[in-house]
Length: 486
Image 1: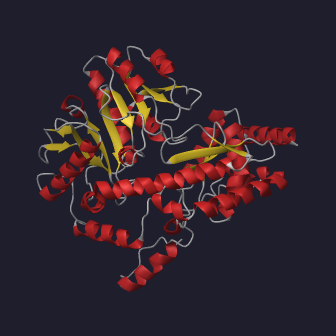
Image 2 (image 1 turned 60 degrees about the horizontal axis):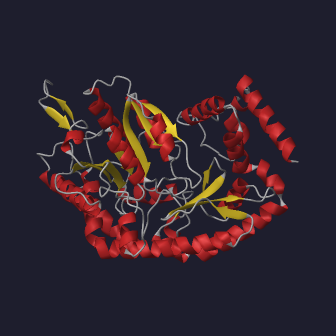
Image 3 (image 1 turned 30 degrees about the vertical axis):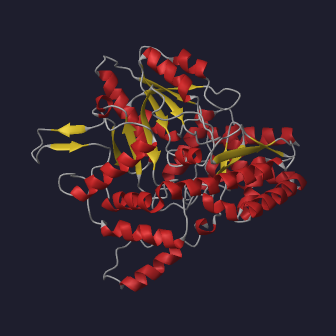
């Protein structure tokens, strides 16, 4: 690694040429080979967003009274989104840098709202499928997280939610859809509970916010999930997902200022002057505001609806293709653009299938409880569905012929993490591995090296020889589990 600043500045063209080489090992998202992380339409659209972004590249959203252009962008984007979610002009909200910030802001807001009511030990109720951002927010802001189990349909169990409510409950969460299985939680039933107990209800629509309204506009009936449901007090939605904006564009919208004001930070006695901030970040990049506004203008209701129709066409073809493979089964009945599937054949390890698919150039996410593979489908995937399903059939057949693949590569890693009963030990091992990967001397994380991951090795010399009690127990468990499967 070249960690030194060059003595003299290099020519721009030379730098840009080298930048191109950095992406050599990145997923091939431009050809729709990724099923998460990236929302890409085409080069022409991307260049349009780049131009919109660079027009406000140096503008700073820190002070809304300085860059009034950014405040206008933000207000209009929030206004467009609020209209999508069926709430009136009394609503309020802000743009954020991403879904994690939007979710964490809700945790902070409802914690502080509850303080005024004398709640000193705040708790929040979330489905087991809640995005990890909610656990992160709970940890950062000192809110105890209580997880409600799922019903047989993979939506949160409403009765389980109500049983978890107590005097310290500051908010309830619903997903629309939740990430792992793509299900829309029963928001209307959760609303009844929230209203009865006078508890805020947040809907995490970070994934669904900019596609669910357009799926409906395209003629598909969905359960109500937005501000049409009276108990919903706030919604988070990422514009840089199905809104196809540049990265760094999410939002959180509140029905009432009475909740939103608890999100705002104010310092009135700082020597630098009076300071107020509506979100976690201070400096906020102006380009993200401009590109989000431009994306909404470029697509419009018609464009977003067409994209949703194309997406659902790809989803339905994916579902049919997966159903045609007898060794696989869809999880639940997801109504939108996220799907997951698992193996129903004991001779087919689904994580091994993921490894083979990855070797064919597909970037595939893994799930646990149950073990499964995952796909977040976008409109451009309609061009590759047939190829994906063909590769999936061949991958399943290959794994069935080679069961030893379950003990190799990432299949071994995910199998270990998903099934070892000592979760605290797994957490420590992952924490060590992930933290150590940020040392300047560390090698890149290799998820196919399950032995190194289980020992928390950071790639430094001699690390692979270190093995404590935790590592020995993990190794023993993996060996025992492998023997049972033979």
